[in-house]
Structures are given as structure tokens and as C-alpha cells.
Amino acid sequence: MRRKHAFTCINCPLSCALELTEEDGEVLEVTGHECEVGRRYAEEEFRDPRRTVTTTVRVRNGVIPQLPVVSTRPMPEALVREAVKALADVEVDAPVRDGQVIYRDLLGTGADIIAARRLDPRSRADEEG
Ligand code: SF4
Image 1 (cartoon, rainbow, N blue to C red):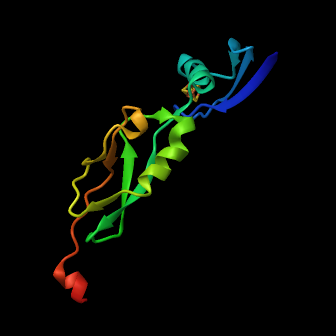
Image 2 (image 1 turned 120 degrees about the vertical axis):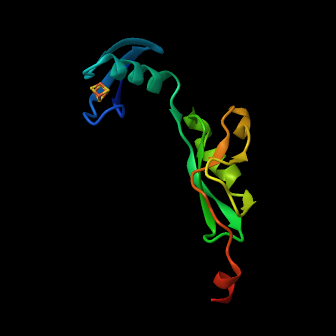
């Protein structure tokens, strides 16, 4: 069966509206792209959509209670919800370095989860104040 799929290219500010036509999984045509990057993007989004995971994990004794984290590479979109759920149980101790590995090879995807910022420990003055 022939089907059309719509995507918005995210590779530059033009945000071209892409349309991919396929038949039984075989790509027949991509339209709406202004350049080759957009055509490739539409095919990747159709065949193997991937997303960078961004979320937060809990921090013990940090100046703030949550640490923003990010995956080192995009992972299959179908696994993102499960990945965020797995990270909900993770807790780290301050201090944390920017880029510090928080979790290795999440769900066997080869993507590590790293700290997106530095996080200092709470000082005694913070605790008293
Ligand atoms: S198709 Fe090319 S020009 Fe259009 S948004 Fe994507 S990268 Fe930009």
C-alpha cells in the first residue's frame, strides 16, 4: 500500500516541510526539501527515527536537587520513554563535573548518559541558611 509521511526538517532554520512517499516500506519519493540533507533526514526519520535523550536525575547534597543529563548519541525513538523511566531511579552525589558519565550504555544502545552541567555540593552555610 502506498502511503505518505510528513516531517519537518530540523537541520536548519528554514524548517522545510518534507513529504515522503513509500510503498510497503520502500521509499519512492521525498519532496519539499531544499537540499540533500533534508532528503536524507526524511529517509532516516522514516526508517530509523532517533532522538537525543534529555531529562534530569536526582542529586544528593547538591545546590539544586535535580541534575540535567543528556545522551551522548541519539537512540531509537521507541526506547526514549523506557530510557527516561530507567533514569527516574538514578541518584548521584554532588559534586558532579560537566560531562561526567552518570549511566553507561543505557538499555544496551551504546549511548551513555552524561551530566549537562557542573553541580556543586551544598555548603554548610546553605544548610544553616
Ligand atoms: S531541507 Fe535543507 S534547507 Fe530545508 S530545512 Fe532541511 S537542511 Fe534546511
